[in-house]
Amino acid sequence: MKKLYVLLATVLFVACVPGPKNKAAAEEETEKQNELVELLAKYNKAEENAGNAIQRDELWDQRDIDIVKLQDSLGVFHNIKGKIDGISTRDVNKSKVVDYTIEIEPEQYFTISLECQYIVLIDSLATDELYNVIKKTNEHSTVYVDGAIALTSKGKAAISPWCDKDLGFSYPRYYFNVSAFSKSPLPELSPNLRNAIIVWRKGFESILRNGKSKETDENIAAFKKATELLTPDEDAYMGRYVNACSLDLYRN
Image (cartoon, rainbow, N blue to C red; front, side, top):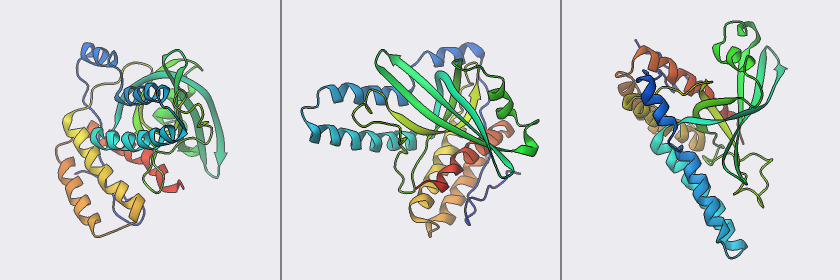
């Protein structure tokens, strides 16, 4: 039976991960430009033609609206390829916080920075798979990640405070919640898994903006139905996705 994950005081659900396709299909998929990279590149080009500060400000706001819309339609940004940098750890109570950045450079003078964070109980360090993969990864190595742009409590894309607005189109920086991490291309996500993530996001974003509401029970019911079609591996992936995104509950 599928597990339900409780987020806040409201039973926000879980489950999941993708059954891999064949290796050739996964590698072919990574040659495609990721949708997030394509969107940010489009706005970088558009900013070059902005005639004044008003136009630039409108582009800035519209870009982040479009990121959330795109994320809601896809559920997860899949197989983002970049270089890992700035791996560091710090102890907080009984947990270890792992910080790192994924740098994507599609072209010269255009670099996307995804600031990532992972929290693991110190007692679980020896067995935690993601922690041990990151620990064994060298700085500046090529990695592949799945995940979602972090959201603020108002449901807006969480821009890093290190993102200078004057350079923010050419060098965008966002907080990013990682649900899968690998040194090789990640397997394709099944339609059932994507659908379950999309359904979960609808309920989660509603709670971020409004807290528990009358929609909550409907969202849980819809999610439970979506997870009935998931494999055990997909259940595990969904759990990692939910845990990663739960950090957004503590953002401003």
